[in-house]
Image: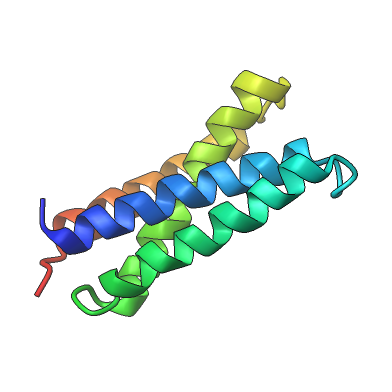
Length: 109
């Protein structure tokens, strides 16, 4: 895997972790999770930025968002019992299909 894809993967993982912490912060009423969320979001952008040098911005952002949506949907179901309707799962499946397609057809510089 090229450095650009590594950076993007790390940005996605950090963004998912940050969003999870944001949920756990209960609207920033639990400060430790709120602060962790801010730190993880900052780290996320530190990894996202260098990947922009080597991957098309629109494709990279679409992959980042699609992977984040899938990760958060799965964690919401597993950790918080947040069920999705079959239609919602189908639409998330379409996002995943688009994300995989973009990943397979994009070469880093």
